[in-house]
Length: 373
Ligand SMILES: *Cc1c(COP(=O)(O)O)cnc(C)c1O
Image (cartoon, rainbow, N blue to C red):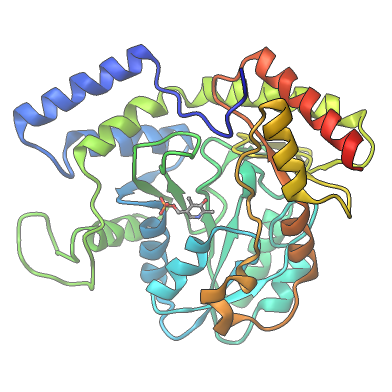
């Protein structure tokens, strides 16, 4: 038996709970922005100790809505080079210009130095991304830097459901946090996103944006340039059911990560991106840097063909400034981002991973490394 790159876990009782919710939704005909959306919002806010949550159609729309409430049109928004395209895409959709900054190779996040180098007089906002679920211990320093420039810090927390630093949850470090429930994320709603914030004004504006900019659900006065960013009740029900598993999923994922930490400590040349002191990652991804000179494609091919272990997608294999569609925003080389994107692999972490599977990955990685390094 091989180990797949990813596995989406809905056990039988969760599948039954979703089926019952769907039957109820179809029977009542309340198919969008109804009681399941509200339940999902309340549960997600409670899970993260946040005051307000607004559920939307995707993680990208969550980020774009937050950027629109800030107002970034024709202004700069700092984003890290190591992230998914959508972080920069949301800036573009909101009318802003992404300024792509280098990262700290130890955390794969913006550092105070790389952020300071990217701030301009025209900066309207800064987006911090918690790659792999890891929250940088520099987050307070980053926020202080933002405060000094009078610009908000926004979290792209698509990877970080339930992650924390010093007991504070992802989504609570800046003006707002944007989460994604795309199927590969730690919990999913099929498609969907969530905004967490302490600001009642941002919450109210986000609700208006998500429903075509309508001043209220029942009138047709459009007061903001909104869009069709609603979440359907069907998706909200899936998300609410899956969210109930978040704590146990994270426990399982962390146990896998601890085993990887222990095994990799005995292997020369592999550099895991380690969890900083005080951080409790959800281990959306377990990121490891390969030794320089080891070919990643060979490494992955041999792991799959000879050991049945599929290494999951990188986060990410190409930094934003080298993405063809973002070439207008390329300013120069970003050496740390280029290095970590070129050398990383992600070991499989599943929310129901077995000890056998974990050991298969450990054996495969050691064998492939012996052969190639
Ligand atoms: C998944 C992801 C998004 C986008 O989420 P969607 O729900 O697919 O729109 C944004 N940022 C990061 C870092 C992501 O991984």
